[in-house]
Length: 324
Image (cartoon, rainbow, N blue to C red; front, side):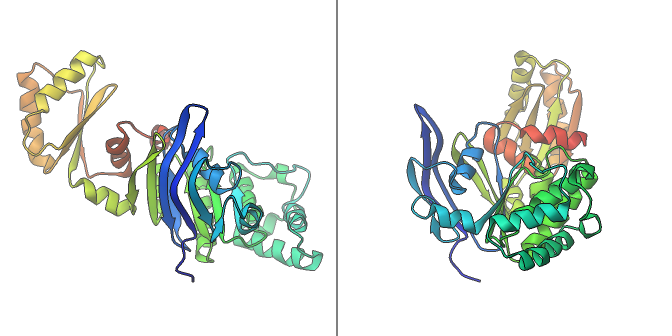
């Protein structure tokens, strides 16, 4: 496997009129990695991916995919990548096998090889036993797996997945995770955007968090959680008003070991070195301020906490993930 990055960007930028959507993004993704890209809506995540997929030209900086410049070598880049977008577009009257063979034909793969390749891919994504069925009879998870297979017909070096499990039930989501792992084990580099933090934690070798067009944190999931170096004490209050939250922040401001407080609509997240020992002091300070917490939860840092600390807010999909 080559030592050259599968994806590399240097000071990558994109401006729309007076809006700087992407502001100097630097990435280096090794061949064979599963790389996660997280960000709130409007952070520049989709714009970055569109530039890497040659769908949108950069207004500054450089980017290479599979060793090819996304501007100068755009046609070659497109032949080297597979893309599975969030919206699945499948012909409902075609069978899974017919769809894959048609996709092979679009890439100039001869008919004999197309039949073999379709069978390989149906087996890869666990759909060999339903390959003759029309896609309109497939479940949402099966359609997503077939969409992954269709992005792989030309054996791309890099696969871009845009929120591949959005809208799936938890069981189907985990099945898609298994397929992504299998695809990656076959040697394909995977660039994954997701709003599910558990998905990033389970699948990604490394990840980056983008906010306001800038990378604000990057590393392996374990590195990002370890860098916090703190327990997380989450407090919620019955009254979500600014007055209560501000008073709560004042109450805990003097707590020894407190590195940062992030205030949300109805509560506060406290990062402390010894959460178990700190809870008694937190309760005492709240009592002194005439405040009573609705809930107090202690946990080791999660990717949700990393995201909250890096951006000051939670990822939109985090609430859906918890509900699921």
